[in-house]
Image 1 (cartoon, rainbow, N blue to C red):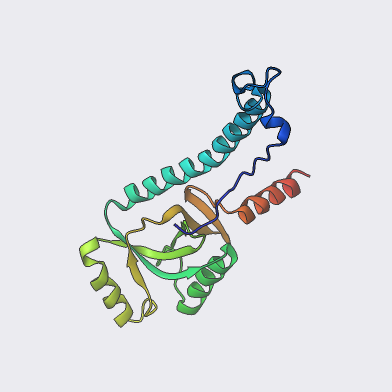
Image 2: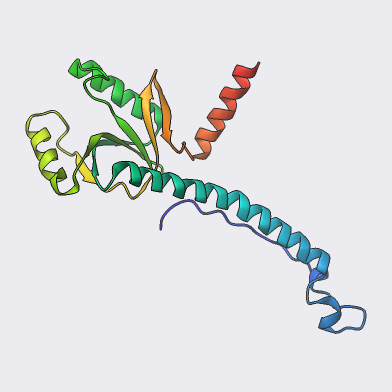
Length: 188
């Protein structure tokens, strides 16, 4: 599976492997106990920190699947950043003269970091035909497609030129940095 991976590098020194006073391995337990505890503490902290994010994503993924109830999502575009998503949705409304009351987009964050822009969902066995009909009426782009949404880990709506979470959140490092920056500027 492609994606970012977190690697924990543990450096063990010669002292970590030194034998006890009698020179046998049972005295030292191969590693000094204090070093083992340090390593276990680091690993436990890291697994909790990384595992929570993974568990949170999996819960979001399951909530999205539950919300779709076996339906497929109709994706009209993919964009890499929140700004590109907002620009796409804003341009769509301006170019078509439609409003949020006419077409409501759901934005899905995929586990590859890209945002899928969806115009809705339909029964899985009717999705391809629905897309062909909408494309033939020039209501959606020709490269629109159906997806079972298995790769989606968060869902958003675009309101007031911002992505507002419906399920989950934006898990990217850049998004967390922007949120921290926003909190700092609003708290001052």
